Image (cartoon, rainbow, N blue to C red; front, top):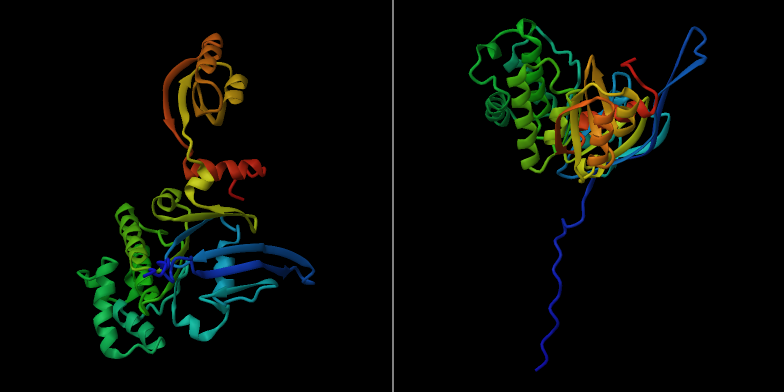
Length: 326
């Protein structure tokens, strides 16, 4: 009796599911007395985020990060291109029920207490009162405010860090599938930053998709599956840390003295302060040491490492002639 061939079973989730998609998305504003000046805030941005991933967006102030968030959330209209959230065009109202958002500088009705504000947010999402009464204490515990007397105080008495925590709680009040966090570590002390990182990781464990931007590159490096870099409104690169930083290790070198021109020829990300310097070696270690000795330099350390995300980010800026935060 012939046995039927065994069929290969494939999980329906084996293929990554797009959650955020943009295609040549752009936005410009007109300014000036005659509205004849055009400022391009975002240029031809093409990007895809997949279900369950944490994506970090990097860029200087004014690079277009918040503009991209506002376009995706339907808060402003694009001037070119198209985009979708959870398979629907941006602006789709039912989709907004499945999205959470923490702005960089949120405005709250500060005459409300933290608890009252979360109740108000729950009512906006038409969450049944019985559900919100269970969910609010869970969220306060998640953001580290459950044991604080502050939840019974008016929010005008909150510190910047406490407002950031209550803002994170409201972003999660509707148990969203997709969460946008605009500078979620802003105004937080090291413990607060750690707690926000843990919250983001717990959301990831729940299968949620997190799209956030931050100036704290070390935090992005610790928690993101992929990152993208915006420079003057243009998305110049996006990928995993291995794709962007490379998997091959290089030598991180520190030393004193020597000829500056020679050192710059041998070292990437060269940085010198008075007589001390550091950088990443780009050539043969033995040949470098011979040149260093001939130039009267002194080696302090040489360790295998790879570029950090901060070093990679700064290199992208330098390559484009950007040397300041302006």
